[in-house]
Image (cartoon, rainbow, N blue to C red; front, top):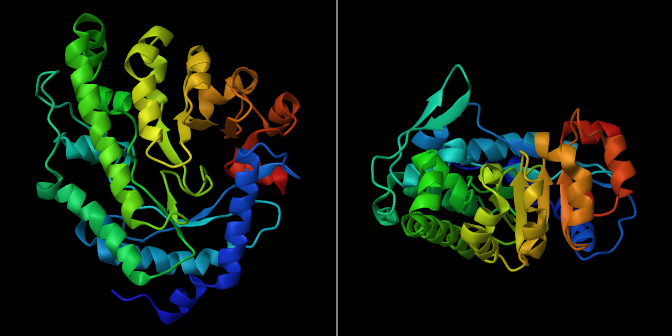
Length: 346
């Protein structure tokens, strides 16, 4: 499916590309430790196909329709007080994309409007890397990238599927049994954590090798937008492990995964993870944390406990309003994201 000439012109508009890159420069200045002239706020727009199942049945058509839809929305990106990045993001299988590559059955629950997976049958300690050349799901994911590149549009950001983290994926694959094995038979658990992390790094390296750095963004590209050259991992499941266990089994893996990117990257947190702050502070490739829901309540602990060069992306919520966040941080090292933050900045 070809992109219309009007959409292609809009999505290659030099003035819009320069405006996007100016916002990237402002973000990079913040990451570099320079005070922002005003509070940074991010809430982008994401193009989509009206038929979500096209992503799996005809990814080329899905990409084209998503770009057409994005072109129709692009005027909303013209904002002087907030970064409104234009994106498309083929988020295959939600947070269970990697699970599917390891052979886990992934399914969509229409009632819950959510993806789920079933645990795999193999014994912990025997996990094998999938043969990606024979993996239909991975080949479909690659088709979305090649379709995007074929349209030759320089403005949109391309968000990756959720590549997550070794702990997140291991818990998806094995449930609570992996946590017990981690304590009782650590060598078996470590084997599988390593296999998972190696695959995650392989995938990130592939995306980095084919997508322009200026357009590649990890998951939730429209809100967790970082400057070019930064990666992202999901730390949701770390609230299940103590600080000693995280340091022994995962911090090096997570830091290594972020190290695939030239500038390190972000960890997403959404639960009670503040017991890990001293370890997070020590991870050299961890350059930002994204806090939402329960994690956002602990903004003060993160702001005061992290390094001065670690940025916080905050989704304001009932337990941490924009006003409270500003009182805690004075706007320093802070990026406000999401609809609530945007209305507060308007």
